[in-house]
Length: 350
Ligand SMILES: O=c1ccc(O)c[nH]1
Ligand SMILES: [Fe+2]
Image (cartoon, helix red, strand yellow):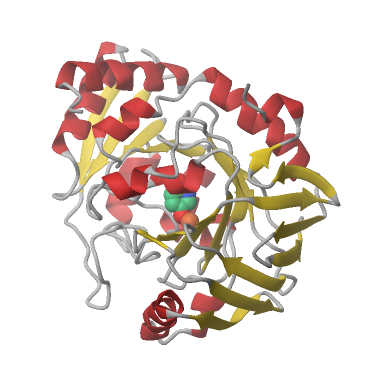
């Protein structure tokens, strides 16, 4: 269902207000030629209506000859900003950046946030932005869960299909996403509603059995034949199963980089307005499919880069894999059981 430009501007006013944009603030809208111009315009209009000093930073797009597909999460690390110090300084000068071109998983994003500048990523289709318009209830649920995650020393994930994965936690910070960039140095993504951390280096162990229906990003496919990932000492060592496994193996091998098998962020979804079924209703190029990353009660697993939190793995291949019907335990206590959020109570819906 199409969202009007007026409604899009009103939604940006809502989100930027929650992100503390007012007449004391400067807002930079970061774009490239492939940005959704309707999103760029709505962000610029809304920031001005809130009294902020607004400016645009337009970068020539960056394409790596090895990158495949149009999903910006598929090839991470180098971006249109890489090496462009003048543009990075122009962005660091802002209080808030609305990123409509995708800096995620780049060292430059981390450098900019360290200066205290806030950043809000907004690249999904307006209809998806509307369906998951950020709310203070989303923020409260995710922050309640963060209280538990940030104290956890270990995570264990189990499922009836045979998943038994574990890792130590604590080496890396927790990251929350609820679509509101309200604190200095905070990055957020509208739409979202989930949280994650990274395994302590070398500690991820076990087996992940991707059952029929799990979601593979950036492929935008639902698994049709079980895929088994065998993980030891922090890396995926074997991928086996049927066609889906062969496709995943071939895709990751293509990058010819052993670091693609490293484990990236792991966490769980808390967004009830994100739907498992949504990916099947969108074209692959519509966006990055935040429904998969955020749907309530998922276990979100990923491979590849950890530069977002100062890690050394700047590998370009990033897989986000959303799983259903898992048990997620932190220090032996369940936060998710069979794909339903069970704790903490303040993170549950209904
Ligand atoms: O919001 C996001 C989007 C992609 C990703 O890999 C992490 N978080
Ligand atoms: Fe990811």
